[in-house]
Image (cartoon, rainbow, N blue to C red; front, side, top):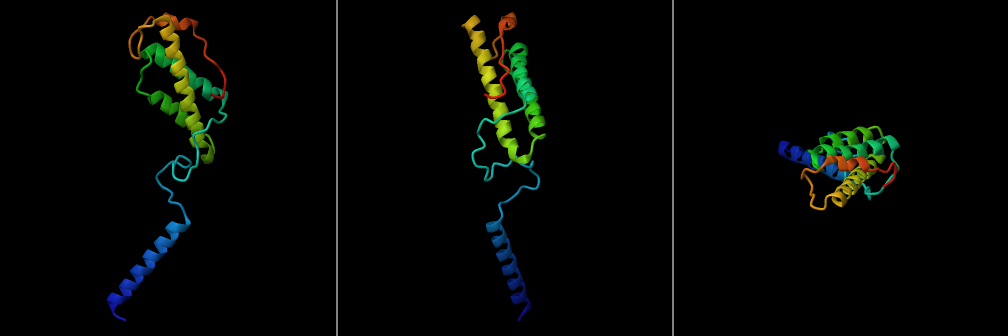
Length: 145
């Protein structure tokens, strides 16, 4: 057997080994956050119970965005809160909890927008309004969307 044949044989064995491994195990990104990969997750877009404290914090951020930015923000604060909460959970719970908190945030923001429009029909997102309108707003405290 020549050196070339030995090298070709070793390469063939490596390729077969990699191919066999790829078929038996799903790829796991070693740099990713455990539980946050969308590969083979199934339906993670479902409402799951979350801690009341986390739900309340998300709704408060939506209120703060409305009051301080007229419904507009860069989103860094909400992302940080959701990430902080989801990282406290088991990896298999993270995607659904993150999705649930995002839904809570967007639904609360929508309710706030509708509330402001009831009091100022010409208002639109980002347009200044009299923030004293929000003094009469009562947010829900439910932990499920």
